[in-house]
Length: 107
Image: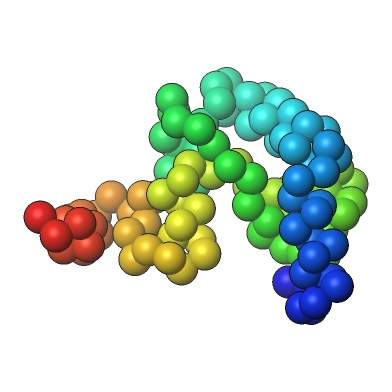
């Protein structure tokens, strides 16, 4: 993760750049299609949702096209889980995981 202040502002600008929003986006999407035969979350296999890109490593930050394996194509639920904003792991289909999700949703 970049250091705060100027580095963080540069990182936020990068996430809005044409390089990230178009070039990296299309390359990761094409890789997913080649590997899976469809556009889906690379963690849980969900299809039909808007997918997001997630940095697995910041070692290739600003040069992601040089190592597409540093980017994961994920659904919103998996992205939240990866950023520890949710205890629910969509890739974990065990009964215990489903019980945690029900509790998290207050059902």
